[in-house]
Length: 295
Image (cartoon, rainbow, N blue to C red; front, side, top):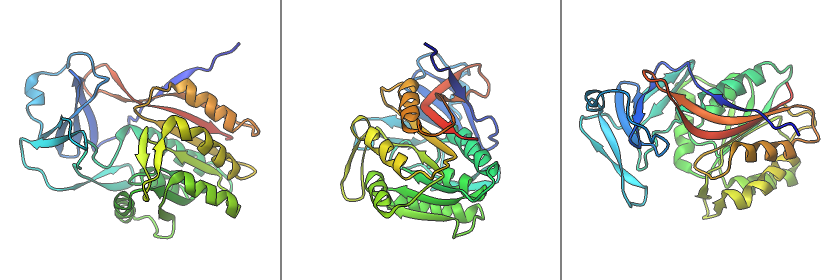
């Protein structure tokens, strides 16, 4: 029996973001001109940088029993939002009611991979991005020349994504932004006979659709992947599946993707999405992933 090899993928090309340090259940990050501290359960070790470096932070997200898991406390004033860039993309970053800032920097590795797969194709690529958040993967696909359908249950993050599209100078017609429940949308696409050459999925552990639909990772993901299989074109190009904060391993995603794509010729890889410290020697695991490619 040959077991799959699991890989670590990193995003080394950032100039506006850096993981400065991690430890004691926290991570110290640079988002553009602002230094922020966020909780990180994976960081069970001691920080490598001095306390003086951590004391330079502009703000810290303090975990509590509140609805959003905590709140921000600021030691220095920062604007409500600010612009950042990654390669040719520009986007808005801001502190929100939760610990998130509108971008998951570790996902840049996935944006680059999607861009390369679309660029290497010899025909127009139709891409579906499910649970698309503020649209960085959608921007990457559109910048590579794809026609993109972006689906997220939150109207707010879709509007945020459109602003990122405008900041990046990407054509208004390149991305279709839809506020919808991902699973219900896929079911309708099956009935409509729609087809996609590439599908990007970043499902949450738990969530709700725009009409209160409940999403639970383990219960619904198998059926969602089966639905996605049914809306693939006859010659699909790629699948990207990422998961955060779940008990599943990268092997789980690997075998789920293999099952989904077993009728197509291609290669499946899987592993962890990580951030590497700018000054230390450590890699911080952020998510698990599986990718399938025909190219």
